[in-house]
Image 1 (cartoon, helix red, strand yellow):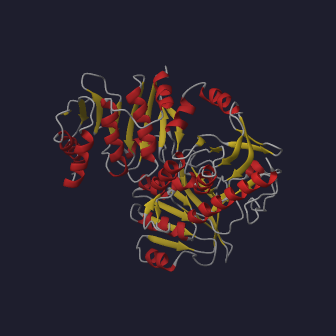
Image 2: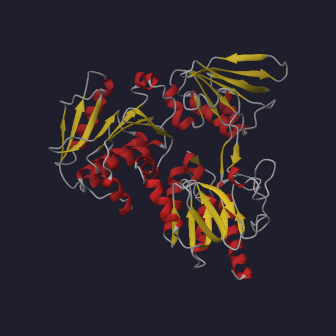
Image 3: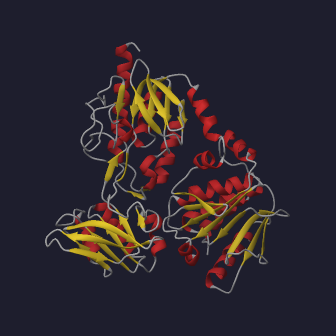
Length: 515
């Protein structure tokens, strides 16, 4: 299963194992079980520190556990962790053996100190680029704390279980039998949610921080660039963000970032964070800003009740996927209504789905899904598709794709448990039509994350922050950059330039105002 190059790389990692590991497989006579056993044996052949047993009795078959020899295993894989999840397997082997993780010491101590039985299950798809972050964080928790267990479940392999639990978006995390959360989550975010009292402790610590010369709200490309430019000026710089990387984390392929021919969103976001951390920047992750107040010191209030202060504040909170805002959309989000075709597409294998939006994102989503699902119907409000010609040509060449233009989606239907279809109005004939689909992928653009600023800063009718050429907003000492502003083109490279520009503008304000 593993080619010679991958085996050589893996062998190098396995030399770091801190102790003996047992892989215990629960198998049946399925092709997937045979493939799983082949993978485990190939891994064991690379080192004497790994042994394979086939006497497992896990409820999910095929599956295998990763544990220290002589101890009860706390990490399990119900599925064959290849693709994006192969790294999760390698890290699990190392961390379960006792190899020290590359995680902040305070987070490690927080995990070890948790005194509650936590049994996590994460449902994934192997093509999901957000899932490994969640799997790896929970595996690490299980490796560090005897009271924590974690099982990764491949939704495509265990489709009956996924359908029984109405899981139609990944990653989906269950804790002790109930829903815990969905979507990409970092170790910090998981701990903030699972560790009782963590939020109050964090709020107290944050409120005690001294004022920053420049406080940046948002950790996407604009915020990261601003932080680097500010730190290089030698001023006290802080970044507060819900998740570092922002919406870049949800972008699979990036092919227009100048000088980098091709990369992936999570990889770029990791590089951004590493670059920022190479400077003296105080990064406060998993924190959401809810209120801004001007003054000699601008204050930013967070959702946990903490208050941060800055001589200048630079807002780079980016944008989020635009919703259809039709009946049924919120009710069936994660149960048929989806926004990430790469993550959730495999859960609809063999089913009929719809894609809303005829721009590049919508057409690319339809092309990707056509290789997985039975049929894709692309619905566009305009009278013609707006995607690049090369993408339209590819789309129209696919036999299992239908294109509907001049159509307004009006409702998402469901049976109370999951989505069953949608209705749209033909804008030419005004006829209402119903489409029987198991899922819909919404790809209709972005909305700025500026709701928390209404009544504080001048915003356009679309909610974008109005800025001048220097990034200055309507409130003195407050600057903004990136997709949350009136910048006409929402692109990574443009956001980075805008973040750098606004940081320089804010620094100039510091000098000239004497603050």
